[in-house]
Amino acid sequence: MSVPTPPIRVVIADDHLVVRTGFAALLDSQPDLTVVGTAADGTEALGVCRETRPDVVLMDIRMPGLDGIEATRRLLGTAPERTGGPRVLILTTFDLDEYVYDALRAGASGFLLKEVTAERLFDAVRVVAAGDALLAPAITRRLIGEFARLPDRAAANTPPPRLGTLTARETEVLLLVAEGLSNPEIAARLVVGEETVKTHVSRILAKLGLRDRTQAVVAAYESGLVVPRARDAKAGSEG
Image: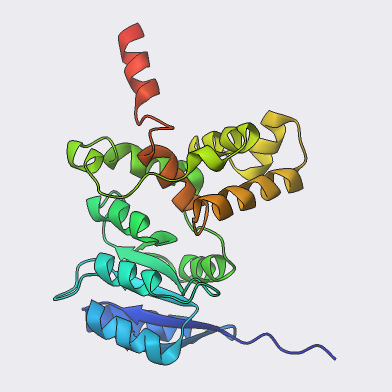
């Protein structure tokens, strides 16, 4: 007799009561999802997460006091190493919100528009709870391409990842991940099996101390391994 899988535990942090109650009602309608707490700001979110130990946090960016970015940074930075803390999904109104990039750097696993459909919301929570990044690599690349090239981003005080620890093949795989290729596409490009690609990605994340492939894309850009808009600039000069 199989043991029932416990529901995915969710915390919702948003300063708008309508958003919190609306998302909570939707999520609680699913048998495999349960909302264990809500918060109106970042400080409250940290407290609720300490008490409830959620699997996923839906985190608004703009909240009074402690905002969602700093709350995400503190939440994931203080999490026990054995668990890595909950997965964080950033809630935003705009798909190219400049703060989304900062949230990804802080450790968020992706983002959701607040106008998301119910089915998309359910799928997003399940995806990140399973340990995957929500953003399709191409969307992640577009976000980073928009913001990593800005002058103030270049001055970010994040130490460069330990790219020197990667093998030549792992570096090649990281480049392809940053280009927006999925695991099957990388496997086809390198003429290897998909499981081999998954192994390389797992080793890359472990060596660089990263949470998921979204963070790997961020690291590839911030380290200079990939130069944002390089191909766009080349295309413009050839035109």
